[in-house]
Image (cartoon, rainbow over all chains, first blue to last red; front, side, top):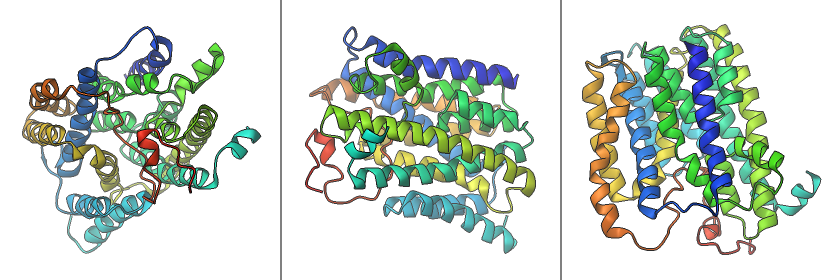
Length: 102
Length: 258
């Protein structure tokens, strides 16, 4: 099953990548469609972030992980460098767990 | 390649290196999370070589780790990667004329390589930036994922070092700039609420796809605003440090004053 996921996802992704350079000049994507594609990716990423940050299975993920993500979000808003954002998320969550807050 | 190094100015090379470094951290956590969650070691390595799209890789693995169906994993990854299509339209003169260059260049077309290409003032520098960033990222991403796989096996429980917070944190950092648009932000909030509610009872992967229904908030506004062609699809610019002139490339102006 995992092989199938990798194969289909790889083929589909490469098709999306190659379609632009190949179709250029023969196809113009309306601005509205471009906007919709952008928004779709954003909506998906935000939903993915929310679900990954807050849920585990069908329940709440506990406090440590959302706290780490919250710290990372605050740093991202303040335009901290990417490695700092990523590191702060892990360290915050790890320290909270070390302190017994899961 | 050596001419590429001379073509690009130092600050661009430094920014590309910083983005590669950031992605190395993300790649390593991807490898570690995947194996420590119980998936086989070849999976993250094969994904990184063949799919080479961090968001989609994380999304698909997230669904698989949560016990979701392969179809949901594939759909989540594919929807995320639709954005690569307009990227390819945005940089037609960058990949090169030969078919081999186009076929190879397409594979290293990412958020980062396209963003760096679009910031450059002329074709030679667009090409240099695209290929330098694309090849550099491909090499570093795959090495980092392998290192992460090794580390994940050694650590065992990656939750202890908080690695489960890394993925959502990365997503937030990537998506934040594109939330400046109000309609998109509203749609994303609605979508996230729908996904959260659905995740309480639906199998993994499906809730995130249901979030796309939040797009109803975007469609009517898009019609009203269909004005000048803007680079609306530039979703995730690399998070390089903001500096004077760093945004000059966005309106097609040369950033040579740096």
